[in-house]
Amino acid sequence: MADERPFPLPLPWSWRRISLRRLEVDDLAAFQAYRRDPEVARYQGWKIVDDDAARAFLAEMRTAPMFLRDKWFQLGIALRETQELIGDVGVCVDGERSSAEIGFTVNPRFQGQGLASEAIQEITSRTMQFGAVDKVVARPDARNERSIRLLERIGFEPEGEATFQDEDGEQREIIYARIRPRQKKPARRR
Ligand SMILES: CC(C)(COP(=O)(O)OP(=O)(O)OC[C@H]1O[C@@H](n2cnc3c(N)ncnc32)[C@H](O)[C@@H]1OP(=O)(O)O)[C@@H](O)C(=O)NCCC(=O)NCCS
Image (tube, rainbow, N blue to C red; front, side):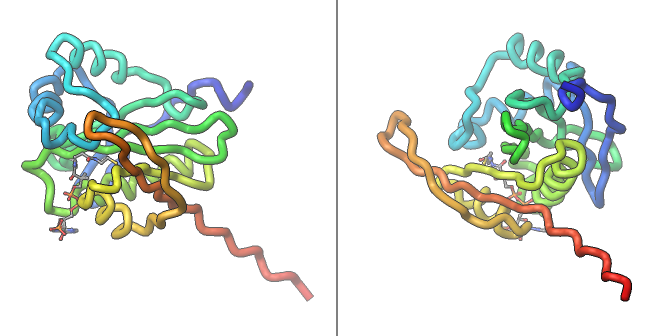
């Protein structure tokens, strides 16, 4: 299928104070600095891994094709000025190419400054642009107040809920979505 061929995209995508760029094996120390923090991992689908597994993941993501159907890829979130890695964001376009799901993480040292909001706004609009979807969703755990605050701040709206099991029993996640604004039709000539 033509739209399933990986195509090269111009990276990094920079906006205000952040850049979205490819993860590199050299990011290992910065990546593990927050990915090994149990508080950061608390509401996430991923698990804490050792350095060897993290290195293999970074090497894979360095060249992973982007915006294929049903295939997650991960980009680094970096400070625009220095390119220092401060977090990462994953994207997966669904099988019908009707929407894409995102998941995101920022090092606590760089939280509370609006940097995560900038990164998630940027990945949302790039996903609509290059992933050819009209809708981007995120599924925060209902207990994850910071993530919910972020999503609402940048215009995501709740559209449903789902339940899942973890070690503490049944939990809820809230499905948040942002829809691409409809383009105005050009006025009819009279
Ligand atoms: C979810 C997560 C990315 C949110 O990070 P964050 O730094 O709180 O998010 P933002 O970038 O939107 O920052 C917002 C805060 O910065 C403050 N802020 C300071 N300067 C700001 C600025 N210039 N612009 C916007 N906000 C600013 C806001 O007031 C807000 O503070 P508050 O949380 O006390 O209300 C982070 O908590 C995280 O990585 N958690 C662990 C992983 C996780 O659970 N991910 C979600 C999976 S769905």
